[in-house]
Image 1: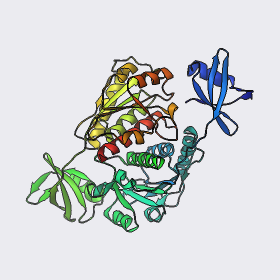
Image 2: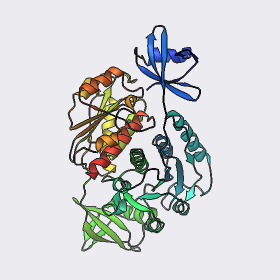
Image 3: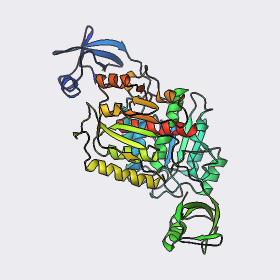
Image 4: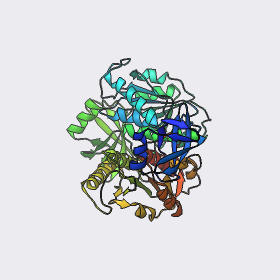
Length: 240
Length: 240
């Protein structure tokens, strides 16, 4: 639904700025009686178009907005080449991630120092902020400095998964692993680099209490694995 | 897991080309006893590194590959601006989509003629092909010419969903709507343009037997809505 900020409110009617009114009528080509959301101060109302020329918008009932998941959703992802990190953070924010932990693993191709925060991290923070705005989240997800793999393994969450296709056929699918998860749980998912985790890393993750999960029959690119995991986990978390 | 094509096979050992052997040892930095997949002719074997210097690879058991979903998964998506269509087809192919139907709706911004096949469609077909190769699918998804909305509504599938956030709170989540779907069903999901469907389009979709579904609490960009839908549906289809 289209959403606008109120310019002013008089009685049961709300008024938009001339720019927004033009957008609504001439660009969106809104129809009579169609509904829009209008934000006035801290409250958003469901409003309807009661007249088109001149434009009149009647205020309906306030909309209760619940955009956040009921638990924390953490994504630790191996730093990728090019703009794939941007994609993970932009889409991951839309999908409800509350905390991004970019990390360096043995097969990470990008060379940066753990603990550092270069222009790429600042860029990811900005992307998280603008994406949160766009999808109307009230909380902007955190973006950490570069972690090393041991730091990722020391993160705490009620459920800790790592995407590990090398055990496919042996490890459960993420879908099956999510079924017993309780409402309001915090969930951490760790997604490796394009080359995957080394055997040593996988062993360490198992020892640290992480559950290996498969993301299905096809080989997903690293950034797709992150987005598919978040899509699935957030749908599960909202269904509980 | 790393996968290579065999250069030759002798006894229980498989040999790679010098280039691949160099990649495996010096780039991937494979460890002793680590496993790789090696394709010989039509069969793929799970192999393990039995010696590192010189490299020796022992053949293990053949891998049965099932990459495709058990039913058809069709995505009709409103044509988007910029390279978002590329993203939908590349990632959608990884996520198991079998058939892409780009379509034009009232609020589609891009101007093309229904039924036409311009360079953008040819480009999408190439992306589907290379993505299928990358994720090792045996079937390349179909990419249709531009459809109009009525053509989308006349598509047949066992389950027909359309993502319609304007009914959020009223319509079921896609997650809930998928629960009763039977194994092997064909599933069609329709995702609108950035501006959403018009009320008239939504009415027509309802009349045509489509089920409106919500994709959760946050407002997803159009391309994210496509990818989140496919992630969820393919996970469901593989879980049945």
